[in-house]
Image (cartoon, rainbow, N blue to C red; front, side, top):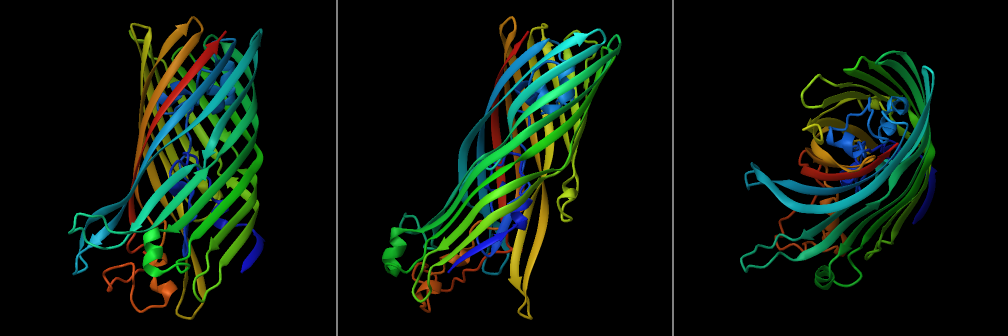
Length: 485
């Protein structure tokens, strides 16, 4: 049966990731009967210098990429004009484990059933120019950078419970795959106006206005193995495919202010209002036919709003009187997720970093950040009266990251910056693919399973009483070239 619908999908509209997602947990909608979405993690700083200093950059004076943090940074730059190009590579490792119990239902340990390592890349660019009129300074800038990533890959083999007494693997029953690709990009113009109140005392106001767009494709598949078809019979086991192709479009504005207070302090403040983007696309799910049951196809036309939470960020830079030229940056950010739904609370993120110049030439940078995000889970079940119930909940996850980096001066006004980051997180999540789908008695109508040697097995979709444990780590390499005049 093919159903054509036009509606706003609650779980989809609240999927506002910014780590890029890079993890399938950040943008996965789930296999029936469960659907899971996430607020994810954000891309963070693609300016390599700020990235190496923990992602702090509310007040920045040395790189063109600083204008993407705060448009008011244009008129506090040390140079008349600047240009920067940055690229990043993420290596992500996703390990999923399920709990093991003995015959007395006592917990033993967690067993790894899937481990995936993938790499993703992206780039950003920024440029600015400013002029001075007596005590006034006026600047224009532009940047192009990714805001959210919807990319993620996942492969999982389903094997039966045959033992390994004969030094052979259990038979492979099916293979599950998730292949997601796409990113939300922002192309913005920025303007800043500064006023010099006195020596080392100036105030700056800035605003940027940008167009945002994303073209996303997400494919989820379940494919039965040749061994499974040979064991059960041809044209019995149904494959499953879910294909989502959608686009985002809209505009976003950011307001910023900076204040230079003496030779030792710089203060920065930004505010990004709630952003509403338009989402259009299709979401098609197909489960093949099996004996007695026709093919089931569902087509959902996605047409609605996609919301990004408001953000406040305040930070400072401290330039101490030191034998080694030193800069210390720290930002505190509030993301108002509560503006999206009552199931979320507002979160606070911290970014901090330090830069030391060895012999006043070679900078050594270190930093730390702690960023919070949410996973949203939607469960559907039927109560004792036969009424269908949908329960939506959210779980907060904290992702810490340590960073480091340096730079090399290639020419008088050309600098190569390098940054390195290591991030990790651990959380519980529902199974991405429900176990009930692999119960061949559902499709054959037989009393006992043919794919599972242990006939006492009772395949059921695990709920929050028996969730997965997920461990992720992300290694990020960031490089950028900056030109200044």
